[in-house]
Length: 217
Image 1 (cartoon, rainbow, N blue to C red):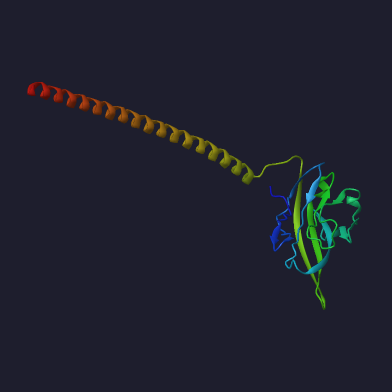
Image 2 (tube, rainbow, N blue to C red):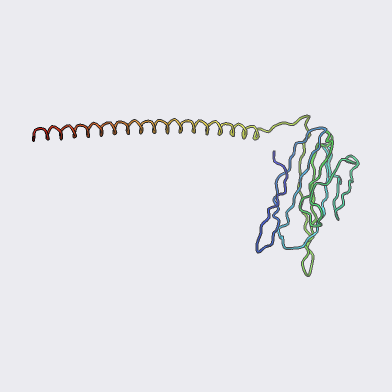
């Protein structure tokens, strides 16, 4: 399963380091009676522009027609607006900054009643020299609560392929070792045969030389 992660990469240019924001999809399957992180990241496209942002979470349970206000985070303070989540929501997003890019929250003790659609809304104000520009971005996450963790088919297939690749690599290494051993062994036997042939040729030549010397005498 993919987790909603904000990855910060330090890129140094002329001695100045800047963070790079990456958006990844949130998890959508929660396990009953456990905690669950709802991920929401909205990367600012103009890193050099000053900005402030606030995050609002909305919730629509199964069978409900409209979203209701769940949680807000602004000026480094969070407020729970839905009594169904009272005491269960924690901020897991950007900290110690007004320029929010990670708006993730954590819900403790998930229940089956928490199944539904969650909407994350970023309200960002880009501050230029002469004016301010407001933009809103939103993402909807459909969450399903299950009795226990289930593994998706993609996860199972990826694990099977990993084991197949490992076994295949081991077999390939074994074949390579056998091939190299046979090649080295054959080369050794050939070298021995060549050495023996050279020895016999030298011995024969010496014998002929000795016979010629005896005849001359």
